[in-house]
Length: 235
Ligand SMILES: C[S@@+](CC[C@H](N)C(=O)[O-])C[C@H]1O[C@@H](n2cnc3c(N)ncnc32)[C@H](O)[C@@H]1O
Figure 1 (cartoon, helix red, strand yellow):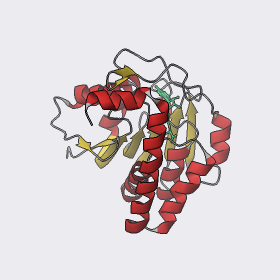
Figure 2 (cartoon, rainbow, N blue to C red; figure 1 turned 180 degrees about the horizontal axis):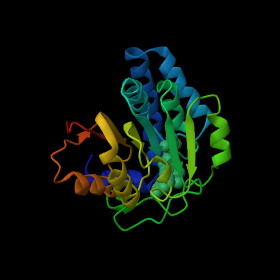
Figure 3 (cartoon, rainbow, N blue to C red; figure 1 turned 60 degrees about the vertical axis):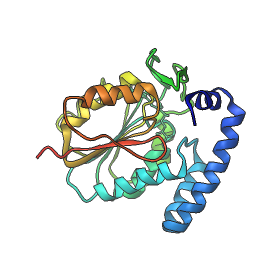
Figure 4 (tube, protein in one colour; figure 1 turned 90 degrees about the vertical axis):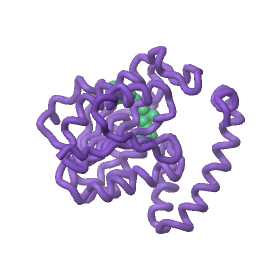
């Protein structure tokens, strides 16, 4: 698709919904073919329980990486929890690993001019505010070692300043939030630790990654859909 078509899809909600509908069907069929029915059912059930803006392949990637990283030392974290959908994917995969969940629980912080999708400013301040710390706590209550922190990251990061991480999932949508998270988490990754982000197609998230990693010779691995990951292999 050229940038004009992409931009039209973003601006025309009905068109985006129609394309999205067929993409969901197609990806669920493929996932059912290649992966176990249990994880397919998990993703479907989360989509019924909460508002989850992940395509099936993207949801599977979160689950799969959390599962593989649960064999490493280190805690896990997610910044950008919203109603807890992707956090539940991690909970199902992480075993006994500690999971630290960060969100304002009152929606997105201010959106900058860098935060565009294919040239169009897409997010707005306070978007995703239809959630609360209490409802997410209840939603994830059956899982062990899950800790919630309400407020704007990195102001809420003090309790984990001495922690090392095997897996960090970022879904913060915005340039400044992504930049702050990379500054905080990348130096705290264990060897083999992974940072996975959603919405890498957006200008803000991609700019934050490019700026942060430009002098570090760390490959940024773009995945199918909107995700991108980096692996810490310093040692
Ligand atoms: C798209 S939503 C996350 C969706 C979620 N991962 C899911 O599974 O549905 C983006 C979230 O990022 C949060 N957020 C963005 N920047 C933040 C920051 N600096 N500190 C805390 N939360 C932030 C917003 O409050 C919002 O809930």
